[in-house]
Image (cartoon, rainbow, N blue to C red; front, top):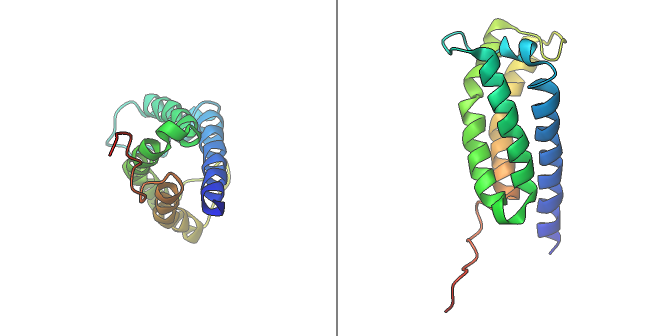
Length: 136
């Protein structure tokens, strides 16, 4: 019981984080965030806006019990997909939110993606057996 409440709280915290990132970074600072899109990808500002919309949907899905498990999986795949942008940012020493970060901070941010993915999968119930909706 306590474990499920902890997971629910973590899902809400993650949802608020991704909602804030989706709105504040991807919409209000779209031009700045577009700079971290690797140069081999076309239409960086469009990518930033689309990923912002995705982050808002992920936020909703994490706290919607019927969808949290699927959302955890989809969000984990998404975080792997945007990993090249975070690596590009670290390689180029780009600022984050208008703040210059050290190389250590930028690479630590990259490394944090993996425990974040594990936390999302755990909190969203990925490693639990799905509840059987059918009879016997």
